Length: 113
Image (cartoon, rainbow, N blue to C red; front, side):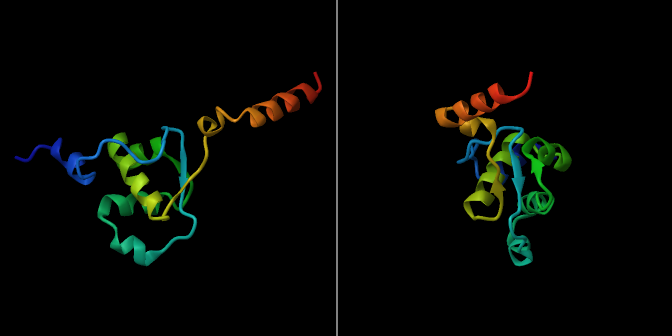
């Protein structure tokens, strides 16, 4: 009997880290669906690509496809590098953007109390 532990490792070519910073709440979408591309993808990547046609988080994709979170991150990173999926910005993206933080603070100060 073949161990299920080997499969995720082979899906990612042994990679455990993605090229993009992907948090569990990071939203993914498909900007322009391409059925030819979908047919060319391996089944696991195709499943992610199909599900991401409606915006979904990394956690939702992992749970919905019953795939390990690390595998989903690596496969999404590969799809993003091909331009097949769009990775939406998270708060982490702006955590060091002082001008954005100042604009948010100014906006909060202008809110009626």
